[in-house]
Amino acid sequence: MKVLVASNIAKEAIELLKAEGMEVDVRADISEEELKEVIKDYDALIVRSKPKVTREIIERGEKLKIIGRAGVGVDNIDVDAATERGIIVVNAPGGNTISTAELTMGLIISAARKIPQADRSVKEGKWERKKFEGLELRGKTLGIIGLGRIGFEVAKRAKSFEMRVIAYDPYISPERAKSIGVELVSFDYLIENSDIITVHVPKTKETEKMISYEEFRKMKDNVIIVNCARGGIVDEDALYEALKSGKVYMAALDVYEKEPPNFNHPLFKLENVITTPHIGASTKEAQKSVGMIIARDIINLYKGLPVINA
Ligand code: MLT
Image (tube, rainbow, N blue to C red; front, side):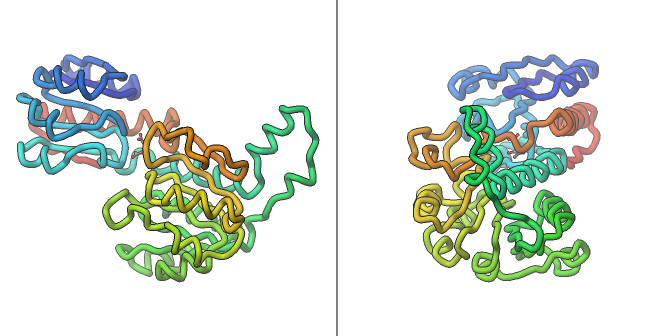
């Protein structure tokens, strides 16, 4: 089998594929145009959130049998086009859960205590102790939108900070939420009663801009907004207005409507916005884990064994 690795994945995964006799080409910076040209030669394709695997690319993949997403979200892959051609799409849903939950906690604490801003100030030779008075997490209400794998781990960690944790998730049972001390509530209740809101849902037609002007209007004053899920779930223009007006105390974003984002957007000029470049899953542990999950699935397909996709 010939495998094209079109993103940076863990070297252990590449070694495993080679050890199983696969021919592996690594072209981490391949463009969509280039991918269109070369895809016909490959049986398997591995990507992360880039490049975009469009219908056209899939249709040109004459030999393509499997597309592996070394991560969770498959929103950059035209899954319908792949399914129509009998191409299997696999992801690694559990591989980066902890890393993303830990980054979320990092951003929540950074926002509440203005850590990145304080760091910048000290490095500018200033000693502004009053300016960097922040907020305690204890006793605050954390609203989690989406209590799936990542949301669940965020909730467990937030409970250890003695926070009240509420969640909106129409797909989860109240018993599962209760097992870790989380109260399931309606979307409106969460929006109106949270001190900190963090989103952990995939980007779909239903979740796109699910936090926009109307939701910001209903929120408590001085709310903190965190998005480590997908850009565009929180409407960037509406967020900018809410930050400017002082409604939102601080926003921490790891993901953007377009990536890399439009750095000229006024959001990037605000002091009360913390930004990171989509690094939720960027740890040694998560990358090894998602890479190995995908490599094993490809090997299983090659050997005629079941593809596990877990
Ligand atoms: C994911 O969907 O797994 C994350 O966004 C991380 C990544 O793109 O690698």
